[in-house]
Structure formats: structure tokens, C-alpha cells
Length: 189
Image 1 (cartoon, rainbow, N blue to C red):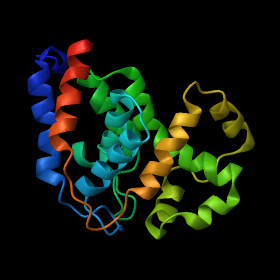
Image 2: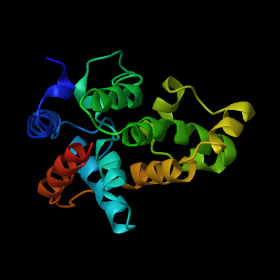
Image 3: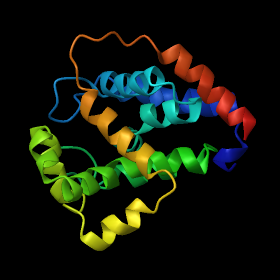
């Protein structure tokens, strides 16, 4: 049975089971767990007043580290985790826009290191290492193409949420809410 034919409830159960199974794993060189990181990213999006689709994208942005085993970035997660996550979500019926936002958070890191070279210095040590696996600093042509993307500004915000969502001792208290909006999202599609 194709995954998209599963009920929205079963899809939400499957997706959130990944967080139950792997959420307490170390967030690859950072001082928080996978779940803490993604929960904080979603909370940042919500605090800025973004719609449910964007809040979900912020929560799911690193799901590619949880849903697939792939070539490792020297022990710092899966190579192409952004694409793996976007494909995983699309296969389960999440919107194309949500998947594009998930896919874009790495592209934004590459863009920001091109556009603002000082941005590289603000990256965590782990993010600096993974940048090399992710294509490195963008070229001028890649940056010009990125700037034409409809959601370029939002993708850049997602990148900043990714950078900021590494605080220790922040309660993970939004999972029930995220499940509810994920279910609503799938039912609308």
C-alpha cells in the first residue's frame, strides 16, 4: 500500500514515532537532543506568528537524520538529510511547500556564508564541519538563483531558527500541539 493511502492518523503516528525512537539521541555535536532542537525550532517559528505549515517545517527540518540511514558526515548526521527529510515527508502526504522549507534550511546556510562571510564565524563547530559535506559556501550564481526563490526569506528565517534552537534545559512541551497541527495539515491535503 502506498504510504499516502495511509490514514492521516497513521501517518502522524509513524512520523512522531521517529521522535520517540530517536528524539533523545544527541543532536550531533550540539548540547541538546534531536527532539529538544526540533521542538525549539518549532517554538521559535510559532512565537514569530507563522502559520502551521511553517511551524511544522521548523519542527521537521532535521527529520532526515531520524528517518534514514545514509552516508555520515564524519559522525555528524546524514549527508543530504535535508533532501531525505523532504522526500520522506512528501511521500507521506505533507505539502510540497513544507517539504521545500525542510529541504531549504541547508541551502540557506550555504547562502548566508556566501552573502555574509561573517555568518560562518557564528556557526557552531558542528555546523562548520557539516557545511563542507553540504556543498560549502555558495557560488555567486547559486546565490543569485536562491534569491529568486519564492520563499527565500522564510528559508533564511528557518536557518536562523536552526542556529538558535540549541539551548539547554528548555522544556519540550509542544509535541501534542505539533501532532494536532500535523493531523490537520494532512487532512486538508
